[in-house]
Image 1 (cartoon, rainbow, N blue to C red):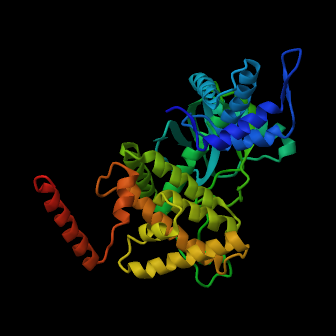
Image 2: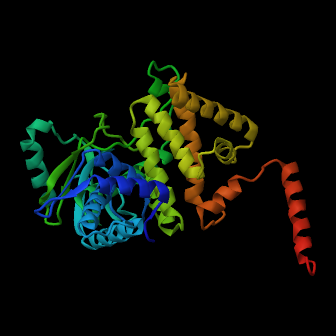
Image 3: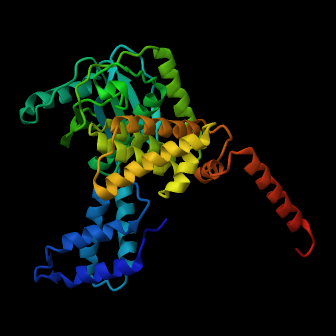
Length: 410
């Protein structure tokens, strides 16, 4: 699909200003006023595209495209900009390399974890890192003393193989795929509440059970590291490795869910929600976690309208009115926090409730008991009334419509 602007009028205004601020130098280079950086950023926010590239790469291509169009005097139409942007992005997408991202996950390194494929990423787990990667990774961690890097004892290694157009795209895609795996595990684990604990996290557990290690390194198939070398995991907490209570059930849960996602017609939507969910539970700040969890509900229910979201998220509960009241309370707390800057009271408890709502919907999307083929079909179901009287009334009305349209000349 060709790229487009979400608002042509805004895009035209920004483009006019950008090119007014540009000057072609005698040596063929371009100089522009520093304010163009803000206009570039705003213009990128208006572009809707489907290129399988990370945002940083597409943004850099956009800036180069604007400069090239200015030099060639092809900037009179906004459509020219998008055409040239698509050409450059398509060319970049075709020029792909194979990368292997290596990181650790906080599962005790004594289990045989299954091989998985999430999107275009092949994920393998190792109790000991293959030697061709280990020697380069260990050497880098030892030498990079200024970053204070270290391998985490007893963690399991994860190797994610992906073909990507850039290092950043490879890392982002690999971590998103691994995030989906961690979210699948998160849903499958039972959360034990310790009611007498002095820790709110123990009383209302919402943190990611399986976390990533301190450092991610990017390698070529030969085992050597790429130029950028490493990315630091800012959410690393150094928790001990998790011992699985039922390893066989855990691995079967992973494999079964992976099969379902691979056969799902709307897997991209579910995987995006899974990655967003685990990003929420990775957050240590309770207020940020609260906001991220609510945004995950919005992603799953395909709406930012509170009334629709509450109706869809409460669909699964027998006492629907009660759970609508709970969601309404969470919505009010979220709005008060956003618009007035008041942190929600009992926020750990609220996060625990939000996790339960999110996991309920995620499970429904993954299992797909009614074999829906689109997310829209699922949300149409979740929008239906569940009270018997309302259902009977709606069925009678639909039958009336059916009889009407079956009449000749209706």
